[in-house]
Length: 352
Picture: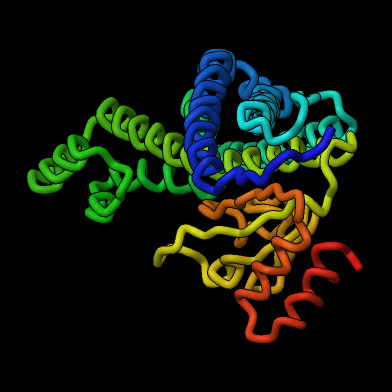
């Protein structure tokens, strides 16, 4: 099998895939949180907490990491399959290709992702819920309220769980600071303003409903952040796996594939990523950020969070039968010193 013609798996195509997968992953997170909360009823939690079976109560939480791991694996496979379909529809090769999810690289990637997501979500969730339980014990609240706080902590980070608890306290004391909470609903803000003006405390039922709505908005916000971050990773990981599979199977030469970093080109772009815009690398080679960090692709799990969370960058994957010549010309055009461009091609792209 050989490469028949040039083609570009564009950053625009990746952006569309990221948007689609972000919605799916955010929905998967919200559904997982709801299912865990449905299983962890107040009655069941109260019974466990009264018996001092805290670790048993915490077992409800491990399902979140598993759910997100499964959703991520599905997203990676969807993206790789999209790249496969693009290759076949465009007839870039002289035969059809098929992505294999049981390819050694794919299996290793899925396993690494599985471990990362389960550990990440479980650790975050355990920290948030333990915080809620510890606070309840410290303040001597009744088991029913402790069970309520436990249940409402599901899906939140430690910082978010604390924010929800602070919101409840502010509502109870009619603290005007609660009016500045951006995640509060317009209706609840109106109710709170009226209560502050009349100096009439909110009822417990009102507070519970307002906190529940605030909590749900926090879940939706976190789902959106997780969806975007994990979709970006899945999109580029799936793309890398499909094209690396072509190379591993001998269908395409590694020198016939190269990638370009593309930013959102607006004021929201990180300075460290603006530095990367236009960088060109071969398949399997890392890009260098303005902070000196190496990233294989946007959202690379091996890079610091400051380089990946809510990143909006993408890559363009280019196929060219004359890969080295195309890259050399591209770098020469951007460089004031042509011989340096040639040296970059040899050292960075061909690994010489």
